[in-house]
Length: 386
Image (cartoon, rainbow, N blue to C red; front, top):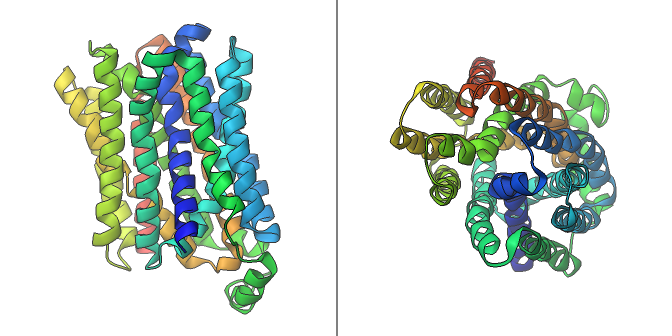
């Protein structure tokens, strides 16, 4: 169990690093590649776009061949992506690096979420929020580590150091004992049959309204997190804040993001997950409203941190609802479908924000994120009343 927990935590730290990486090195990368905000938005969107087919495919692979080879493969692909980014000198190769980063991240995410239920025994909400606390820790530490590494050794060498860290998960996975996929299927086969009377596997998932509701919630939520992670520093520099202070506040966003998940893990009662997501969705609408309409550096800084507090528990609590609803024999495919369908929002919204921000400003571009928050609120309300 100790090795399983260490490997799970390493994977969560690596995936947290993956989601925060572009926002942490965006300014340095943009200078090197001479990118405008539209190209930055395209890069963020590519991360979400590549995730969709990878998630859909890996979900089946995980359920069929087991978690160990998938975990090792995801770690290696993520490390390779950072090497490609480190060597890139033009936009095209950098885009390939982002595609690989998205693929490696998606592979690890598909495995580590269901595995967290075993690594952190308790309710689904406890396990997922505690697991995502470590994810948030990786995201929180990434801007700090990136700032130090960029100052000391430059962009290329900094990315190579992070690539070595990404390989830690593979090293731990090689020495861990994973349950055989056949044994796991046998243990959950009868329950899966009861849970899926309409047919095996994919058919039962697509025929269940909960699958679609969770996917719709992620469709509207994912752009909120991706937008703030990618554009917080640009938004703050537009408010006449220095790059170092802006990077520090991005770390503040991830610290609040992480802390709210830890509190939720121990405080959220079983059965109240849907109501909690609705409350957080309403708070998201309020935060984005202030971000779009607010003026002044102080208010902007406060909203970046407030966003972290509000955003933090949404995904793990949504994942707890999903994994608690479906049998473990279907978890790989359920997670794959969740991200495959919900990731469309991650793809489209940042691209639109980048294009709109190029013509106006990042703050005005956040209007689209505010609209996505409203969509999340509507889906959360349906989850509560269903």
